[in-house]
Image (cartoon, rainbow, N blue to C red):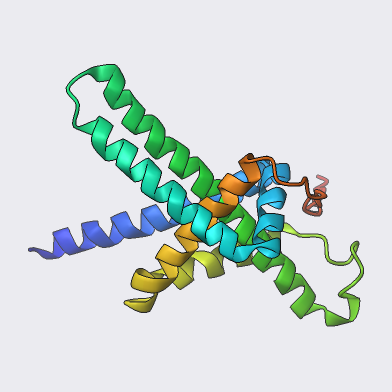
Length: 185
């Protein structure tokens, strides 16, 4: 293994982490109703989300493995659909975890206004901080790889499935607008 191979692997890891973080932010901002519904599911019943995620991951993995080995094209497409659906559930659930972390950061950064909804609306900065904490906690060697990431994956898939199963609708609190600077010439 040469130094180029090592640098290529490091670059692949960095690009994958950056892309996953961008996907979480994009999903959370594009689908605020689903992600807030999944967040409410996480807050109300975290263990139900965990075991629902375990069941969904097992079922989708079995479907993907069984159909990927068949020789007929449309049946192989079912494997891709199963993997894509798992990715969708994981992205919605990860956005919910990030929203939950961001809302708790908002309260911890400004505890005097903990009950004030206007003061604690989620800003893009808080969502970015939540995403950074979420992603970096999974990169911690050994503990992050073997414990944190699988638990987050199962919670995320379970929360995403809970958002699509018709759980109660949560109130959507959109992120606050970013102030723009007008530049006059």
